[in-house]
Image (cartoon, rainbow, N blue to C red; front, side):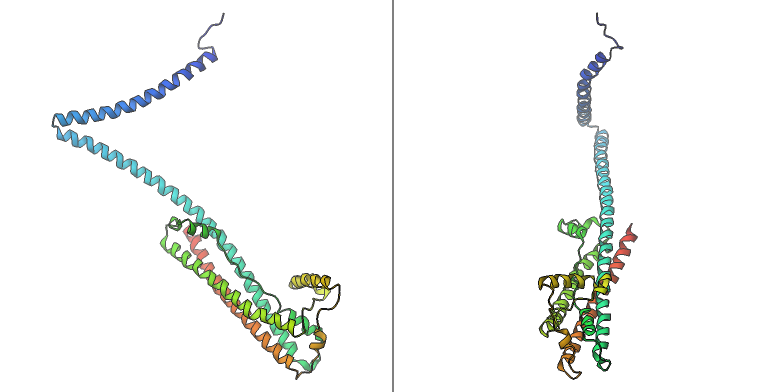
Length: 299
């Protein structure tokens, strides 16, 4: 015969299951009863014309509502500040990436300027009868371009969602807006210089017969020639190993040949483009570091 009692776990669990809905119903009824009691008390005080008690009742209600609103606002503010810290951390990461991108652009443009100086030395000092291919390889050192592409996914998200005001510091917010509005201008300057000067230089090498001169195989182990070696290998594969340039003939011309004046002019403009790109990227890098320090200070 089954005996039901405290020792029987199934019976105890069943009792709890049955009692729980009644507890919820009791709590709900108690809240309703409390509200009804407050309303009844206010009604009684009005009927009795006990205005002091009525005023006190209303004061309690108003203060309760204000406290509830204050708690809600405090929670929202705390959540916004936590979200702001997250966004500032993401912006700091984006800024770091932009710093690295600008640094790489500056290094590329400065390397082009140095290579141009070396090429001009070889072209101007024709009395030494340098090897024509040596001059050609120097000219290849100025070949190529780097496209500047800067982006901040975090700022783009904040701006497109209309949530820039999550950044509570007005100075930081305004500096960020001005900074990211200016960056596309730096990109356009580099792009226009590349289109007008770099493409013209490359076109001149092609049209003059100098063409693309593959880097010596001994130099392909260095990082400076890695890109040229890749393109040189592809070009050699396309033509089946045949020669694709006339550099030795063109660059063996007499010192008074017009080709040297044309080369100096092309190298000069190519160098100016590299200098301009480097300066614009350097200015952007300086401002980027200032923004980075501003964000770090906000933490």
